[in-house]
Every structure is written in structure tokens, then in C-alpha cells.
Length: 128
Length: 128
DNA sequence: ACGTTGCTCCTACAAGTGTAGTAGATATCA
DNA sequence: TGATATCTACTACACTTGTAGGAGCAACGT
Image (cartoon, rainbow over all chains, first blue to last red; front, side, top):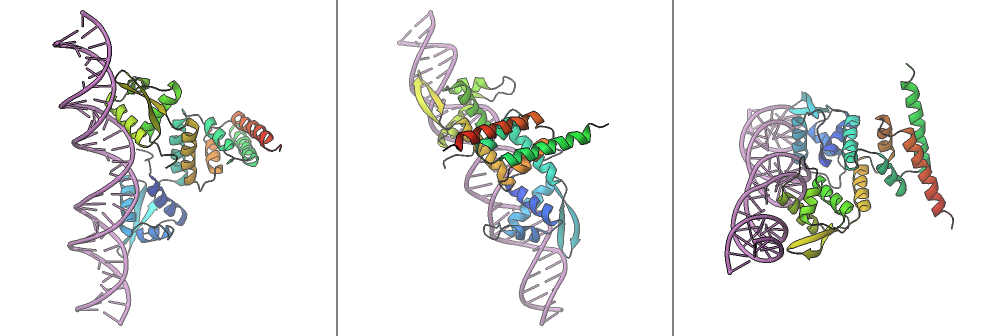
């Protein structure tokens, strides 16, 4: 299982690790918005499960507390998420983009920026 | 619950109804690729659950078989799917598009087509 | 009218997910 | 060093999702 499928809550835990770096369970818990913050042991369970999925690992121990760090990158996890979505559209991204455009979420500026990105990337890869 | 969250299998059942129109459980089941086709009762369970979620409804009865039809549109369901994904990116679509571009899934043509779509839509909406 | 086939409805169950309590080990502070 | 605060490890449990079996009724062909 190279890239495990992560659930919503698991992703929130990962997000805490990605943004604040290696942390204890307590720190991860406190990274949740005060409003609607799961119990300490709930976060702990997520951490254990993520460990089982090899998405995070124990880095060291400070006092009696374990410090965890992400073992998979935010980029990889996000790519997985997107690929899962695309599978619903037969793997084709156009319908997704079309939806974003139709619902006004993607503006002309956004698209033009994407275009620039494509041009830049193709320039970097072709010249060999 | 205006737009229920649909699972992978449920979406496949919906897809059958969207593409073939009102159908019986048997017809839905047979719409699955022969390879890896769930048991009749498995499909039936999904149909019942979708009914519970108000995503489909009984249209009529032919013989002793019920005929079901979709009660929510493919568009609405897909939009829901995309919105759920976006929520992981703070509601912003740019990271998603960037990912699609970076992994080569979105080509220059795709982007330019999206641009055309935006221009066409803005022409339709602005003139008032 | 009867058997065979097909459909409905109900029930079951394992894996995954969200949520959290408890017991016991460990630090820390006075 | 004893009390208090913290952590860990384990356990529990309800709900969701995928998967399907069984009992019984209905329809169709002969």
C-alpha cells in the first residue's frame, strides 16, 4: 500500500503535522479549531491508525510523550485525493474543470494562470 | 439533507440510472461490467439505501418488479463530489488545477477549452 | 393448477470510521 | 517522596459501507 487512503479526520491530523512539523498528540489536538475539537483520545486513535497505515512515524520521545512526524508528503496525499475523484469521471479531468468553471469557482485569471504553468513546465521538460 | 453524500458503489448505481433511465434492480445489476459484478442482492441493498437517502424513487411496477428512477441529477451529485474535494483545499480550486497540470492530466488544450467556456458563459450572463 | 424462476424484504456480518473511556505508567512540582 | 498532571496502550461502541443469504410471494409457461 504505497499511498494509503486517508479519511477526513485523518487528513486533518496530517494537516497539523504538515503545517507545524513533528508534534505530540497533544499538539495535534490543539491544532484543531477550538470549536469542534475532538477529545484527546480521539486524536490519539487517529494517530495510531495513521501509524498503522505508515502515514506517520514516531520520531522521538520527549519526557513520556511520543513525537510524530508525517511519513508521506502533503503533495502525495493530495494527489491521491484528486485521483480518487477523477476515477468517478472516468479518469478524465475535463468534467471536473468544467464543473469548476460552471459553478464560478474557477475564474478566467485562474485558468490563465494554469496556462502559464503548463507552458513553464513544458519548457522545463522538453529541452533535452 | 438536500444533497446526500453518495458512496462509490452508490454512485455506480446512480450512473446506471442516469445513463439508461428508469430501471429495475436486475437491469442496474447488469449494467455493471461483467467482470466484478456484485450480487443481485448487493445491488438491491444499494438501491434500498439510495431510496432511503431520497436519491432515487420508485417510479412504477412492472410484473412484480419495481422500476426505479434517479431523483437527483448527475450534475448535482458530481458537484457535491467536487465540493467535498475542494473542502480539503480550503474551498479553493487552484491547488486542484495545479495538481492536474503538474501530473500532466490537464493539457494545454484542456485549459484553453476551459477558457473558451468561461468566455462563453460570461457573455451569456453579463449582458443585462 | 403447479412447478420453476425471478423479485422483494429482511437479516447478517465484517471492515472501516468517528468518538471516547479506563487503567496503569511516567513525569513533575512542592 | 508523595500528590498531581500527563501520556500511553487498550478497549468499546455505534454508524457506515460493501457484500450477500434466506424466506416467501408473484408471475409465467405448460
